[in-house]
Length: 366
Ligand SMILES: [Zn+2]
Image (cartoon, rainbow, N blue to C red; front, side):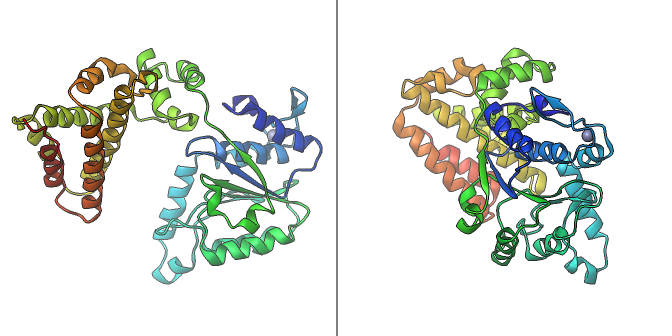
């Protein structure tokens, strides 16, 4: 999978590849951008370009073949969720005593190490950084460049300080990628020793045309909807769970309609009753609340005369009808009520009850 397969941010990709030409690739690179913007995909592409045995050139810039022994093995780390799950499962199978000592790492090539946040805290821990320090000063065995990819920017304090020591004196033959949704989480001293590249949001028209090719199972209306909902993050668009979203959205509409009509709540109670306790119900309700947020935002856009910003484009007619019976005050009251439901859920109040209460609280005084 060469660089031409990377979607969006062509100027940034170009700049990074130019540094490969000059053989002056920085020792520490921060790739920042929203969840799903392609940070990890790009880091793995650059890792292959740094180490490809064929060293092909495209558009006058270094590329990678995707087929040689180095490219193949590095590429095996591409499905990060799957590799991460395997590592966690392997640790769970260990004896209690060993479990505590074992940190989650993903390694598919002897010279390339992927460091994801370690559960259950989901932060980078000092033992993970110690593991990096343990081998970063040895020359690479089969690659030209040792590569370390930290997939998250939330470091435990001690871990961040250890990483800083490495960045103060990095070995000649190593490159560290730091992936960050929010670079503000990284120590200023780490940021100042790294070169920062930001992956910005891809325009939704562009995402739409990618989806037209990659997701022919969605009709154009659905493609347009997903392009809007993914907020410029191409990875989020490609892996979007449309079925879950539309299910949650029809429930959210039941709730909003019921609140706006007032009085009759049979449909609403039937719906909230279907939310069972446990992980599955929790996920269902999280989806519902997220979707409610996006619908309320769309109603706000309609209310303020900005229909071009509406994201749920495929149900614009229905939203307009809803907007006619709402006003700013009601929408902001609804948004506040929603925040209250979320707080209640964190305190583990009975879920369906707090949703019912939310809906009845939103009734318009008749
Ligand atoms: Zn290769």
